[in-house]
Length: 388
Image 1 (cartoon, rainbow, N blue to C red):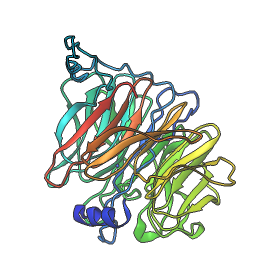
Image 2 (cartoon, rainbow, N blue to C red):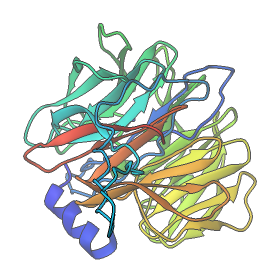
Image 3 (cartoon, helix red, strand yellow):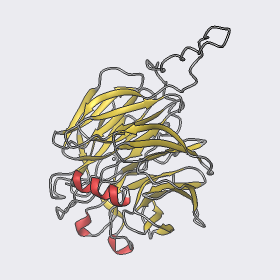
């Protein structure tokens, strides 16, 4: 497992989660993918956590729930020379709402039209897969898990990656119905607890690093896991802390410096390098025209076919999500920010500041959601801000 202290130190020096690029896959309304923390790998060496490319699946409307803390009223005006004070109305936007508190190091989340789902890595407590209504209410335990990393939703199921302590032998992707139920293990021993992405052909993630970095997949219904991109075809030596899919391809970032932004066919084949930038790289997302990603230095994009990369925000981050107009990203510091920037670039807007190590992020039609990882003792939370 990775060391939280190591990550904090890495964050100070270079700035360092269930991903999703916003995609349409086979007309499905709730394709999601995500992930944040890539914990220690098969050789037992801890590496800092990274993030997945978080996104909300296309078509998930997500009702925004009523907010209870719209902020305080205006301050009474000061009396004039011959008049009396008059009340003014606060122009401040409503602040974020806590949907779930006291969580055990949440790292990644996804949303659908009714619920938020997230992965608790565990820290000093047992990890878990959890759910809460998007409008607020009691949180529901769905499954216990050792060192959760990525999380995704597709059709009626939730998928997540996890790993046993210090070895890839306990690594796997697991799934359960969104409403809860029996847990099924897919691709045991093949997946690290790094970000995952789900499409109609399977679940995609990072293979066991001890065998060389690979991109692997396993069928949704179960069956043998296979390399999508064998280690011999990759030039990267670090895990992929961002992964996303569209109808034809899988995209990922590498946690190396430089960061490699890469693409390969869903059914396998040699990868193409879309960009090579100063890293390390984290979350990634895709739409119909571009790939978007975040590094420790910037938020960037490049055309799906490759070309010159563009810097959208000269501020680094970890988690990423997109909608039709903006890129949303988290700064995994404590305190950290949740921000957005237009898809084509422009001023960066800080949506929430003073957050406790914000990590995974997702959006729906009205709101932005994120997890605050907290610290090794806990103190994690699931947050929501409306409007986004």
